[in-house]
Length: 89
Image (cartoon, rainbow, N blue to C red; front, side, top):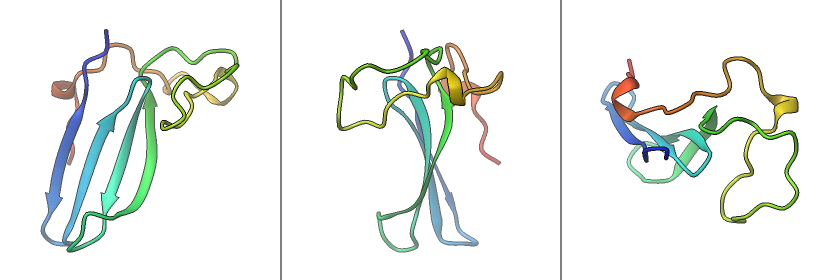
């Protein structure tokens, strides 16, 4: 089972916080606006599950759908990723 990942890093020189957060199938990055908790930018980092061929019906409509094989590459899927394997520089 995939370990939950939640990592934050504050960058004083730009006044922003970077958050890496996993959901059931993906790892996402969020950049917060200065002096607020509003997401200024977000982006897909990697799939935590092997990308399926297609998605019939999303199981949780509050989450983005998983990456499908058509849009993946050899670097898209990271199996058994743990927070201690991630370094933000």
